[in-house]
Length: 164
Ligand code: HEM
Image (cartoon, rainbow, N blue to C red; front, side, top):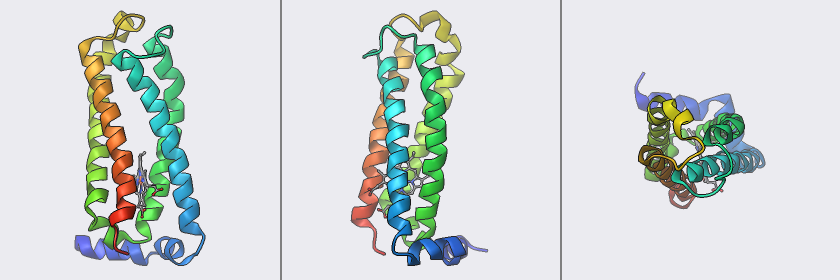
């Protein structure tokens, strides 16, 4: 099966067809997508700003991260599920859309940035959790914040540029 066949199969699937043909499903799912995004980006922004060195200074960086990340992960899982449902409704055209592809790349880069931070700087977080974050943490926080702003921008841009 080629990639084009797979996209067409997703488009023709019962789920893709239902979201496309129902008058109400797409707006409901997109609204849920946006709601989940506000939680993902909101909680990540608080952690990123703490890593950069702004705000929440009286809270340990480790404690702040531990308190917020469960909300981030649940909202992220729901953002992915709703995003995939929206994608299924018009898989061929979304895949051909530049901002959609760039959004996926930016999402992967945000994941990579987070993984690198977890595997390196965060390992020694007990040494700096109550102090000014080290340069590596500030770079990770600024990179993450920039990427998430870009992801939201690209997500909205899909709607302005897609040809259904
Ligand atoms: C947490 C990660 C994500 C963020 C921050 C995000 C962000 C956004 C934003 C801001 C919009 C525009 C909403 C609007 O027009 O009101 C959007 C729409 C959309 N997203 Fe996401 N998204 C995420 C994950 C995903 C994933 C994983 C997929 C699919 C694989 C996806 C697929 C879509 C689709 C198909 C649309 C509809 C575009 C349209 O026709 O207007 N998203 N997203």
